[in-house]
Length: 281
Image 1: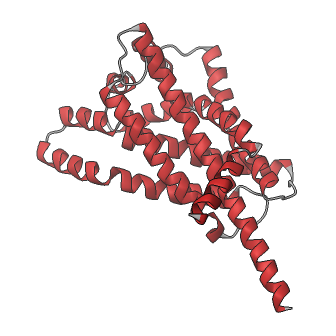
Image 2 (image 1 turned 180 degrees about the vertical axis):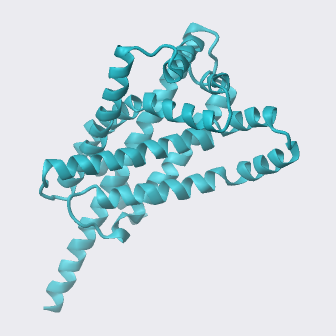
Image 3 (image 1 turned 90 degrees about the vertical axis):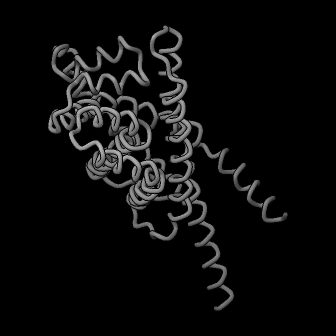
């Protein structure tokens, strides 16, 4: 019982950290900014494998309004491309790195680390952005829209038995694989985010917390997309967008909380090491 009380006090203290009030929303905002470059990447990959843009639209329509899905398809296909959209596309790709840059600054504050040069920090932020956006793309393609994507592949595949076999394997392994992939990538981000060397074992608990939290949140969002999403009515379309943005915000919130958990555990281990060393001396 005492351990439960200690855990609850620690959790309450972590939720009150200043970073939890600002950083999740900021990170979620830049995640949303990355959606346009993300869709362009998906369009190119689908074109490489011979899938039509109408197939992409069918998947997008699962969570977006029909008209909005049309506009997004026009943008990534080049039909609606103009200078305004091009400027927004480039700006979104550049601005998306500001979220990772905020993570670096917050990590330095949490770990009490002095900031390094702006150039190195910005380059690291760009690399972290690619990892985070790639992870977001992985979650969208595998756990969230995997069922719809397999349905499109099944409609165009010659070997239906092979597709069914792969789909059965996918159904069993999608969340275990998702947890492992999220754990490894998030752990790497947690290690490189601060401007000093962080011991790998001090990021294990926070990384596992984030991986499981992301898997649970993504499962709930995937269930909503599969069972409840509607895009034929105005308020249904708006609710789909709200749920999408809420999913992104919760992912960002869990990510930041996992980072704070790591820093808290690291500080406790350092304090424990210092006490042990003091008694030995």
